[in-house]
Length: 166
Image (cartoon, rainbow, N blue to C red; front, top):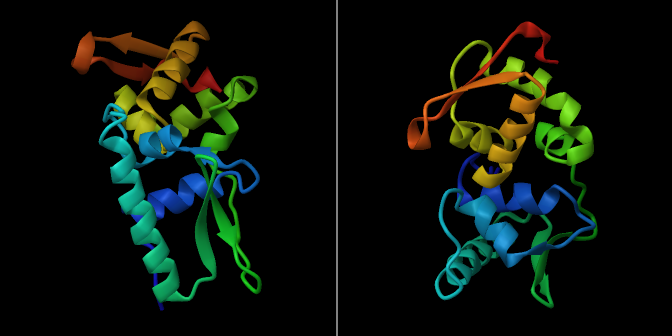
């Protein structure tokens, strides 16, 4: 059987496209999810995403999974072909990355990091969101008194203040 390897680009593409099967994704969104921490360059970044999409299409065809990546007017979506079923799991990202769901953030931080210090980059990787989104979430967590910030620049770290963060 064919398996997608977590953390690899084809798997990451499937994860971002399956987060919402009804909302196609823009090139910039795909780039941010596939290459976190890299800056989008309009001249070279789309080509990197196209290569991942092509690799994904080839992998889907070779695996016989019944999935495809469709493009329409600059938007991309995962298409589930007839006779194929997909089980989707609610990801923590879906629970906390939206402004109206921020209350779940404290609980997530405790579960994920406990009393350990962590960076915005680590949070972005755990949630599969951009570092900008992770920074926004951490700012919100600070404002709610859930985390403490130490350091500046690349050495900035965060730590959950108490078990009452949730």
